[in-house]
Amino acid sequence: MVGIDIIMEAIKKHKDSNKEIEDNDDEESADIVLLLNHLAHKSNFNLLQEASNKFEKNKKRKWGKADKNGVVNHLKD
Image 1 (cartoon, rainbow, N blue to C red):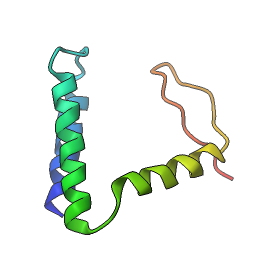
Image 2 (tube, rainbow, N blue to C red):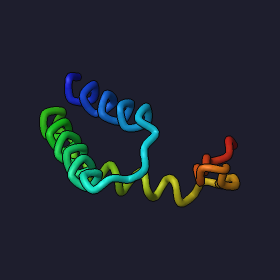
Image 3 (tube, rainbow, N blue to C red):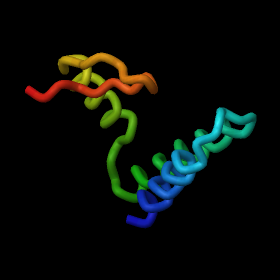
Image 4 (cartoon, rainbow, N blue to C red):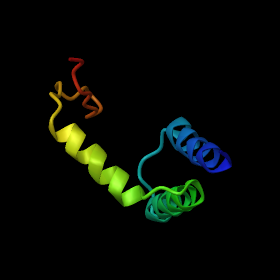
């Protein structure tokens, strides 16, 4: 899956840069959305439906407290 490799590389570069939000981050975020939509189309699945399914699943989970970076993980059952 070439599409997912491109997305993962973009996310890694963003994390590795450890930078503050810049003016072009909205454009970079749009690129990720476009890549995900392309991947969904090529893989023959409905991205919005899958995101909705995941959202419903996450609503039923129990969540921990945010860490110092504001990251929250779901608790294991």
